[in-house]
Length: 225
Picture 1 (cartoon, rainbow, N blue to C red):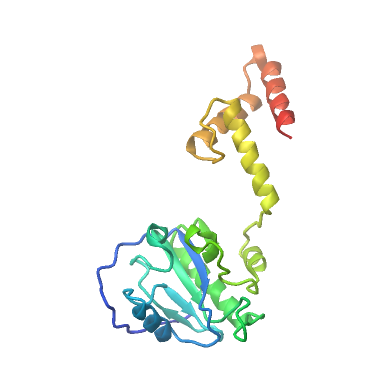
Picture 2 (picture 1 turned 180 degrees about the vertical axis):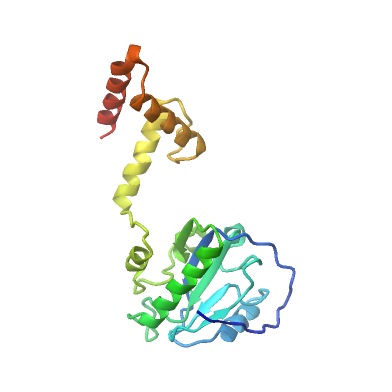
């Protein structure tokens, strides 16, 4: 994989530091454009310059935007912390005569290679769509015609339906309530620690009350079904 190093004339160079743990995928909303086009558009908005860290063209060519160790500007404010923004050339959503319903395989392949490279150098915990962020509510990015679920499957990431997400949150809330934790539906450090504790007791309970603990746990599981 080759990354083309572009030379940009930045409006400012006081970048904040960046320690990436999340990759965010965007679309350019333009069927044909270059990294320099995006840099110019972002300058015209009063930004420092190109807000993404990488730009992937349809032919699979990859261009560097901002340096990875510089915080991007592809999201809003603090949403940018510890993220790497990748922008795809193309308009993969319904946008008049600019609409494109097919993402070139060369572009998807290049995106995979870029993500592989990034993941080999950082502890990446998530790959997200732009429209997963609060500031992008109502947007369609990287676009309805980008094969997102296929992309995640090819990366070995399990795609969970919204219905299952709701069930998981409901389980967490009921577990928190039953164990005296703050009920917020989020599986944070305390909730995970408590779950580990309960499971350990269930698997290896004291001999004097083994059956009581197993019965209580089974009753709890039955109650939240």
